[in-house]
Every structure is written in structure tokens, then in C-alpha cells.
Amino acid sequence: MMTDYKYFTSVLIALLVLTGCSKNIESNLPDYEQVLVLNSVFNPDSLFSVDLSTNRPISSNAPFAPIVNASVLLYRDGTYLTDLTHSKNGVYQASVMPESLKKYEIRVKAPGFDDISAHSTVPARPLISDIKISQFQPDGSAPATLMSFTLSDPPAEENFYSVQAYTFEKDFRGNIFQRPLSIKIISAIEEDYFRNGLLFFRDKLFNGKALDLKFNLSNVIPKNAYFRIAQVSPEYYLYGKTYDMHRQTDFNIGQHPVSNNIENGLGVFAGYNAVTIRP
Amino acid sequence: MDLYYKKLKDVAEFKDGGDFIGQFLRNGPDTKFTSLITAPYEERITSGIGWSYGSEWMLRKREGNTTGWLGYTLSYARRQLEGVNNNKSFPYSYDSRHNIATVVNHKLSKKLSVGGNWSYRSGYVGTVPVTTYKAFIEPAPYNPYGGTSYNPDNIDYLPERNNFRMPSYHRLDLSLTHVKLKKWGERSWNISIYNAYNRQNPYSLEMKKSNTGQGFKRDLSQIALFPVLPSFSYGFKF
View 1 (cartoon, rainbow over the protein chains, first blue to last red):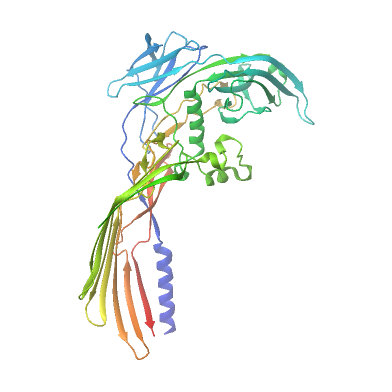
View 2: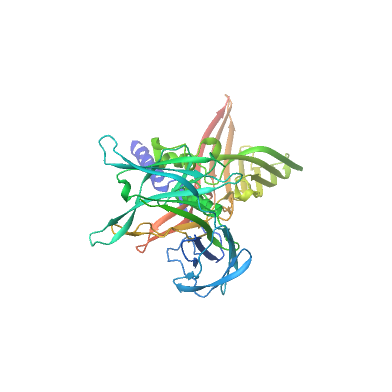
């Protein structure tokens, strides 16, 4: 009798352990449409350039297919300006540079895809004055740079900015390269997000006012520090902000969608305008 | 038969990507609530309106050896909130179009009866990326210590909130009951089978990442709970 009882218990435990109550089953992803993907962030210091590719399934890890046979037309303030020609790997370039305060529109046609279009305006250069750069030595640390300037924000409109600091160094072959510097803001602004070494923020706390901005650059002496401040279009700001949040979230905890200003397609088309402060 | 319609005001919902647990998991005690990417509570939620409407039907048989009922519900539940889904309305998490429930009991004899119930509902909705595309990355300056400074990245495209309906949920439960009257009361034996045809009902969705040797590949999988579960019970009343 006792043997039967042990046998029954063993079988029951084995069944419970081996069967389990949860199971993973492959599920089909929803269908998707193949569209054109356009990425272009432009400013008055460089020629117009557009990267064209197409999307791919979530489950694929193949490289994105570049679009090499598209017709890419650029308009300025509603008037045709120029065509962009294909250079390589889906990158199209124009021989013109964007201008401040001009509205640009891009229209793209490619065989097998719906036509896409997008528009954005190049903002004005940021108004900065009273630039001061000084050196200080934090307790027991390497020399650091304190940089300050006044940013005059236009009134009655929402403006967006980015700042970055960098220095130039030589590598072991003697080639000069640009090294991003980490910056610490010591002014009362609302830090929105960092993206690839750029700090983005908006004028929420100083709309229409002149704001003294102070930045602390550690481990760098003033004569080597470069500083770049840009006024960015709302499209660029929103894209960067949502992309940053997208990267910090994932499917299993609720993914953040990325802002998209391409009509009938995906990507970003946005302008900005920057000023570089040199030592 | 019933018809119902209810409009809801001030319903709260997380904004797109607004979460609490994820931030804590990533940052732990270093979670910065002062920056916007880890915004304070009130900046992560939004309020708006909602609708819930539908129709409920029921048939019931109370007499005879065979008794039971059949119920059917057609329902819609939607939400619309500022800052969510481009301010457009979307199906709410518990939006389930059809719901059927049926229960049947049959007396084989005075002591023995069989019963069964079958339930069905349309799958709940969830947000699933449908495709992925190239992200814009700021031009990378030459960096002798790491090739390019920043790796190109992908963006998963989420067309709208709750764009994916999970497979429907249904299952059949069966039971056989033997009842005997005793001097002291009533004794019953019951054998039942939960989820008799072993339907793998979806409980949640998960994006799984696997290394193919040529990079990572992602697949959508659903977690199913509770396969066929037989049970046996003994009861008494006095």
C-alpha cells in the first residue's frame, strides 16, 4: 500500500514539473507596407543631403535597402529649387545650402513606392552674447572650463535648442579628430534629453527672456574647448526626443513611438542653425 | 436582451512610452525624476474620454433534465486622450468584440449528472511594432578609439496604439458528478477537465530576441497559460 502511495506521489510530482502551465507560441506579426524612409537634418553650413532607404520586417536583421533610383525634388518657400542627385548608397545631394528662416519642402518619387513629401524651416541662428570662458580647478581634480553666455530667446514663440562641446585631439598617427566633451549645465533650464553628445532643451522656463547659461566642462582647459549651440526646428527636437525615449523603452514594457514628419513615408526632415564658439 | 451605452470622462491613461517600472529597473535609485525622460508622475499620464457600448443577449432553460444558458455580448470600448495615439481614438486594452458563454447540465440519473461550459471571447488588443526602419544619426566624427562614435540604430514603427488583436480565447470545461444521499447529509464525487481540448489561449505577448549568428533576430511570441487540467474533488453537505 505504501509503495503505491509513493508511486502515485512521484508520478504526480513528475507530471507537475514536466508539464508546466505556461508555454511560448510563435505568433504572426501584423502585415506592414513597404514605404520610403527619408532622413535629412540640414543646416546652413552644409549642402543639402538626403538618405533614402526602405523599411524591413521586425523579424529581419538584414541591412536596410537603399533607394538609388528616386527622383528627389527640393522646394524653397513653395518654389521649385533643385533636384538632388544620387551619390552612393541611397544618399542624394544638392549643390545648394539651406538658408535661415526659409521653408523647405522635399518631394520624392521612386518606382514601386507611394510618393512622399515633408517640410521644415531652418530656424534663425541663436542669439548669443557675453561669451565668457574661464578655467577653474575643482578640489583635487583636473583643470576644468567654465563657459557662460547669454542666450536671447525670441518672445511669443516656442523655441528649441541644442548644445554640445568638443575638443580636437591628435591620435597616435598624428591625425586630428573631434572628441565630444561631457557638459554639465549649472543654469536653471529644463534639460530635455541628451542625444549623441548633444543636449536638447526648450525655452519652457525662459520664453522671451535673455538667459545666462553656464556650462561646466570637466577635464579640459579653455583654449581647447569648442562649443556649439543651435536653434533646432520643432521637427528635429521632437524626433530626437521621441527617439531617445524609444531607445529607452522596449516592446515588453511599452515602447514609445517616434515622431515622424514624412507624409506617406517614415523618417525625419528637419532644419537647424548653429553657432560655434571657438577659444 | 439589453443595449448599453456609456460615455466616460476624465479617464486616465499612460502617455505613449510612459512607464514607472521600466525606469526603476534601468536606473534604480539613480532614477532622475527631474528630467523629462523620467518625468514626474503627472507628466506621464494624461486624461481624456472613453466610450463603452454594446448589446447583451441571454437564453436560459431552467426545467427538465437538461438545463443551462447561452449568453452573447457584442461590445466596444474606446478611448481618446490628448497626447496619446496622435489624439485619435483607439480601442481600449479590454476591447473584446464578441463574448459567448454557454453552460449545460444534464442529469443522467438521480445520482449522476454531466456538465459542460464553453466560453469564447475575441482577443484583447495590444501595441505591436509592424516594421522597422533606419534612424537618423548625427554624422559621426572620426574617432580613433572606436571607429565611428555612434552606431546606426533602428526605429520600430508603431502605427497606432493597440493596433494588434491577440488570438481569441476559448475553452471547454467538462464535469461528471455523482451525488449520494447519506444519513448524515449528501456526499458528492466530481471529476472535471479544465480546458478539455487543450486550447493554448494567449495570456500575453512577448518580443523574443535570438542570435542567429549573423546578428539578432526578433520574433513575436505569445505566452499561453493552463493547458488541459484534470481534477477530482470530493464534497459533502450536512
